[in-house]
Image (tube, rainbow, N blue to C red; front, side):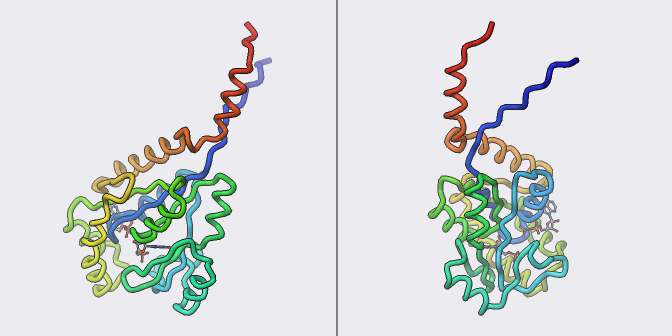
Length: 220
Ligand code: ADP
Ligand code: 5GP
């Protein structure tokens, strides 16, 4: 009979708050979606928004779609961890699911703009890891917004006009990725997540592990 295989060492750690921002159309939602599909340890923070639902979007999966009145009620009752006005609509992060995930040591992904990233950084800096995604060129950004084909020409023009101001915030992020080749950009994000999970200051379980290691007397 084969000897029973010992289970791999598990070190308890705090959850990551992975924030991804970019000018609209640079590809952050595509990268985020792939990450969520491939990494079952990460959950998505589903935002509330007052913007119109796109044809491909599903209520409560991509966003919780709300009226301005409902949004203001949530904001004023402190139910949002952060909120901002972006491209003329309101967006915000529901507080409760984030606090629960963090208390349970689970990782969460936030697809939010620079204003939201700043607010999370101020409130929960120890847990936030932020990534800014840039397009390879402004021409490519424009064609991606058109290729996505989910917004009207007017909305696309507003987003393009806002993109330069958004790009101006790139230095506020821990990591900056140029999304030219999607696979390469995704590999970079995976590497960041892998390394950040290994950071000593997140792995509080290491204290017990090292204590146990030093108490052990080798049997040979
Ligand atoms: P964002 O969430 O930043 O607004 P999306 O993820 O919706 O952007 O991407 C915008 C469009 O660009 C989508 O049609 C997406 O399929 C496409 N896209 C994303 N990354 C790349 C890439 N590296 N090369 C070509 N097209 C891309
Ligand atoms: P979209 O309308 O393309 O889904 O999103 C527009 C912008 O709003 C993107 O930059 C997106 O990251 C940002 N956004 C989405 N949800 C939130 C949120 O909860 N808070 C903040 N601050 N920005 C958000």
